[in-house]
Image 1 (cartoon, rainbow, N blue to C red):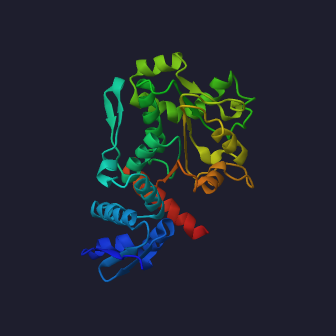
Image 2: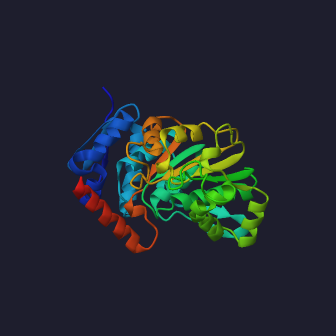
Image 3: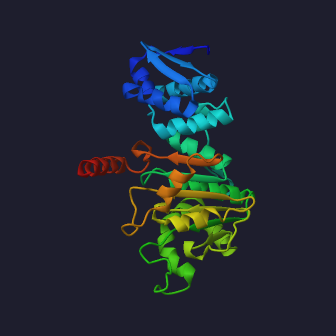
Length: 318
């Protein structure tokens, strides 16, 4: 018979946060760990081969609740996978993760737990998916991380791309060469670069082609070597485009895919490549997936309220 272990939680509010309504979170822990997990009174019991990982997971979840954070499915999945890889991971260490930009004398610290987990994944995985509402820092942190690696000469190039749904993938009817055609759609990315770097540094990197614009339509046949490639607004890729993009990964490179699956602009009956990739790759080892939520919004406080109001309205319309 397997040995049973337990944790006592005296605070009823934290106990409910850990267990979830009708022990929903405990069922989630069971499904990802293979351990038997249940509660009785103010005690959580767990038994199974991976009980030590579950124990560390529960202790980290308690720390999250004590700091005012929320417990949800994707957070538990990411936390469990990280603990399996390194049992000594501490939530406090994750919140202390940062991205330092040497030539700008700037340090970007996570403003939410999910931002901290995202930074960890960026540092550890070669392919990382980040999806969730606008204003959660997905694109900004991706660019900050990529620029840090570039300036520290750990990679040779940063490549930025976006699917251009409004113009059609051929971009043929827009004036100028393909860079001039796609530039207007990359303004949010350039805004982030200009915020992170002094103007002269950004211009120098672009002039040296160390920051490259690469339209998704022109990627067939390419292999990315010693680069970080950021695919923004990935919810507007098709299945074929997403598969093509993911298979461009070469030696010494990372792919960062960001998007918001509630803001899909594809024609009807065309499935989102991001949505399908998240489903297909969710159990592939060494691929990082992080989901951001309304509570991760770090723009103006009203943005969080607007997103919440729209989400509530859309659920009522279903």
